[in-house]
Amino acid sequence: MTRTKLGRALGLLGIGDHAVQVYLALLDRAPAPLAAVGAAAGLKDAELDSAYTELVDAGLARAADETADAVAPVPPAAGLEVLARHRAAELEESRVAVGGAFESYRRNRLPGHDEQLVEVVAGEAIGPRMRLLWASAREQIRQLESPPYAPLTGATEDALATLARGVRQRVVYARESLEHPGHLRDSIEPCVAAGEEARVLPSVPVKLLIIDDAYALVSLSIREADAVHTMLVVQPCGLFSALVALFEQSWHSALPLPGGRPARTDGAGGTAGTSGPASADRRLLRLLAGGASDEVIARELGVSRRTLFRRLQVLMARLGAANRFQLALQAQRAGWL
Image (cartoon, rainbow, N blue to C red; front, top):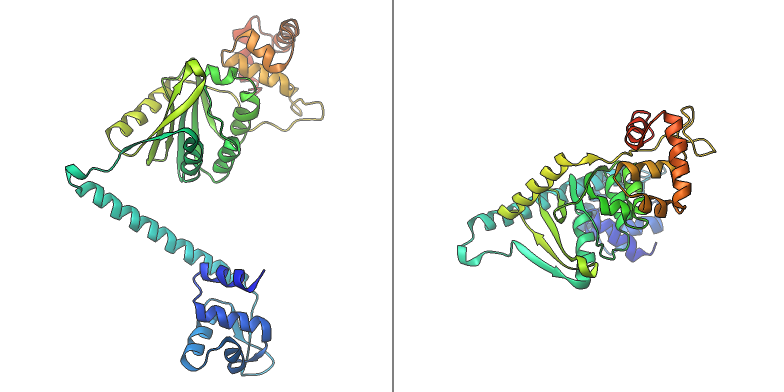
């Protein structure tokens, strides 16, 4: 790392400019008398003492063992951890202060100076804005999801990263989402396996994404063109509350989409010790439980309808099911979904 980058990194942790100069000189000359280190850093007397004291307090420097007046840097792990936590606390305090100031302004603004509670985002700006707001989630994400889909590179990776941070994610999928080519395999299943709570409805009333209690994103799609050209970004207001209520009503009306973290499987693809289904059959059962048609299921599995019917017969025989409804029910009870 160059000296410039190292100095910038120390500055981001809250180390002052003079202390950074002394630390860089320590790395070059220590163990050495403090006066010699100060001369190399271009500091002396009170400025040098203050900078060195700052490094000692931060756990980055101390007196060397060799002589009483020599100083040296120390392993920084513990000191950096304390600095990082302190800096994070300062940033959080700043975030709360700025947010509180804005809320105070919003509550006390004059009616004629109302800020834009509903913003229109269009075209190529939609993707970057969605990713930015998604990354800002701290507690939960709520979503009503259906085609058409805007091209958004990295959307699944963003969702998995958010789940890994411990953000709760609840999604109500329209049946069309399960039937959209490759979407179940490439987007839905990885997120469900990572902890997403997913449910399904025959259709959803609107494409909606709610980030914490801060933003609601409403997609204005053109179904006839299979495209998304405009998105509304709604801040807390009466409309925002209505959108939250719409999501919660849809969530309670929807059926759970089976999934969750998959059980450990053996080399043949079945669940070890439970004779569970192969991954393709598990996808078949999810599509079946979601209400997908035979044509869609066959397409998603890449098989003919005859092969699909044969697989269904085998699964029904394994679970003792007399029809498809019983098959889905028995698969759920057996932990296959």
